[in-house]
Amino acid sequence: MKILKFGTLALIIFLMANCGGAKKDSTLDENIGDRQLYDQSTKEVKAEDYKKAVKTLTKLENEYPASEHYSDALVLKAYSYYSDDNYTDAILTVDDFLHQFPIDKNASYMYYIKGMSNYNQMMDVGRDQQFAIDAKKDFEMLINLFPNTKYAHDAKWKVEYIDNVLAGKEMDIGRFYLRVHKPISSVNRFKNVIEKYQTSIFTPEALYRLVEVYYIFGVKDEATRYASVLGYNYPSSIWYRKSYDILLKNPNNRNTSKFKNFFKHM
Image 1 (cartoon, one colour):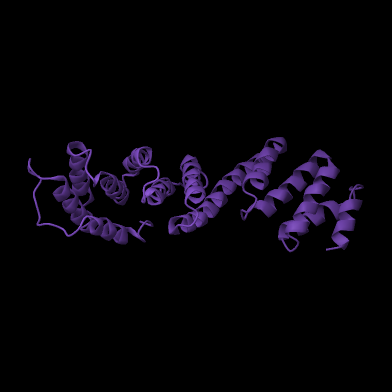
Image 2: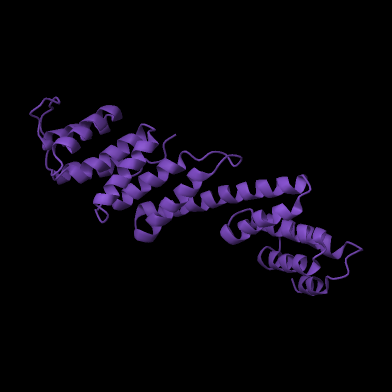
């Protein structure tokens, strides 16, 4: 399913308007000019004939590298690859464009295409998340360089979602280590969640798991510290209540005075 639809038709119209009115249709014969190739490619993109558009645009690139339409041709080519689910070539085309035209008017749009090309290849939480990591980098670059664009606004929502995906992956591994009785191995996973993805939906559970693990270790001060952080930031969370059950209701716990005092003030 395509997500990259808003603004694309407007972009195409803008690019065509920049070049004046379209000429009559032309076939890709030996004498066709760069303007005719560009006009034809825009028609092919609008008709969603992306493979044909790529061939037309590649001809323009190869035969007219000094054309005034060259940068816009790369934009249409990247979009055509993306729309045809050819994400690898879309990313390569974007990289080529950004190398040559880093401050072009369409640079923000190209960062967005690159980010979406990685974003659309993200798998479920149980699989390798390299595409998610790459998409986050692309979107953060877009947000930092072009913060006031509509693409940056959408990228912020995408980054938030990606953080939840990556945090979910860390939680999945951390829970696995707990299930196989390797609590020490789980600690770094849960810490990654609260340090790298602290705004994710998994942060309250990650804090609780650290309370749980440190309690298992017998390090009550650390368990109390994480419980206090959990209570301060998520006082109504079920995970805070679970922390309370561990630290205050366990008859063997003798070192929870700080946590108990904190809880009384909630």
